[in-house]
Image (cartoon, rainbow, N blue to C red; front, side):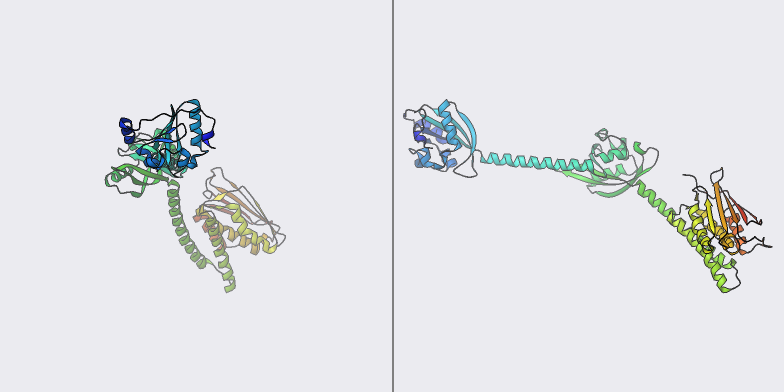
Length: 461
């Protein structure tokens, strides 16, 4: 739009004092200043304006605004100037330079009696500083948000201490470990709150503050309100936090390793138990070889193989239960069911679910194997019509087992004139290994056996 023909208040031109004191003041101003007459021609253009706007006074004086700066036509600056002329009120605003990209100007525009006066200040550097500051603040806020998220959701405890050994901040996980609200830690000395009461932590903190060297790992033991009834174990590490003047604080992580320590202890016990059981199994196997008798080499091999197999099944059951005992019903099934299936005899097992102590699994397996093998050769498991009923229950003490073995519908039993190797092995295991009592009878209907084993069962869950 051609402002020369815009219907706006016409201002009568008059002379402007360009010399003397006023000219000297204008040329020494840090702020740029220019003035336009009623026909929008430059009548003042000081030295600061030359530096900011990139033209000299000789290039602009006497020429119109649009001759010097054609880019201004129709711009926001032009519209603001028209509005100021119309209402007679000055205005201050910032604009991006149209003529020089990247330049930001702060303008104060005010009406004169016969034109407009404009004060110009280059605020580009200030804008850049503000932008850099805003970016830095944004980055700082983002870093703080990341740190807060880390503190809030980290799966390990995190704590920060000042140079006096007082808590600055802890995260939620450490508050859970200690059993004390996070806010209750602030300002408290490490000696006032667990788990740092544990031996070793406070000296380690002092060492980091003194030497500036981190302590990557340190195991400590103590108690907390969260677990007052039991000793707890933690893995911790300490590291210095350095500022401009040296070490400002110390950070620490805390990981509860109580379960791991218990697991390591149980693993050591388990390895000792496995070692003991392996040695015991070898000893029993050698004893079985010495005690076994048979008429032929093939019968001897079958007898030994059966007894060693019973030992192997006992170890399999123990291993499946981490050497913590074995299920009685499962043990009876695995030993007796294959024997009953050989002749198609019936096997009935009735009793509650009970767990055998670990030291009773091996001898009881051998006892059941010997009784089952005898029933397979001479008793109810030797024919399809035979039936073997095994029933059991826990005695009132809770640790004893009563077991009844009843054979029926098989060949009439014959009481041996003297105990054979199998019966001798059975009696020895019951008396010396299981500390129990064996009672046997040979009625016409079939063999009857009662086992009273007072210390066989594990404690009820």
